[in-house]
Length: 82
Image (cartoon, rainbow, N blue to C red; front, side, top):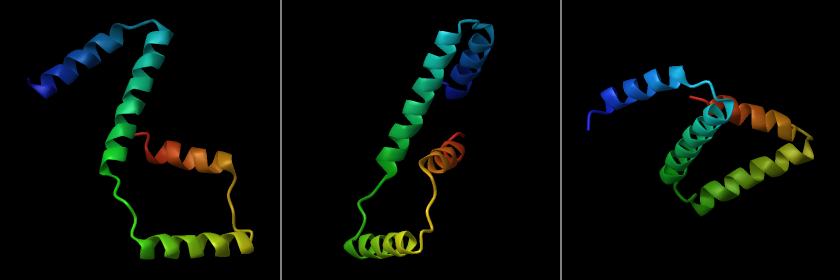
């Protein structure tokens, strides 16, 4: 299979789509695929890395150096919106 040709075909067909539900479904499918690729690349954290990260989190909490849930969502939406 020629992946470039397949992607071009999909792009051409997508330009013809006028159904907002279909566009949303395609967006969801793409997000799911990106998420699966990310999950497959994840590796377990070492104990040392975990405890270091835990300590950083505790310090941030003590210093009230926190972000809102919406700020976190926005950050990750921008980070993985490629």
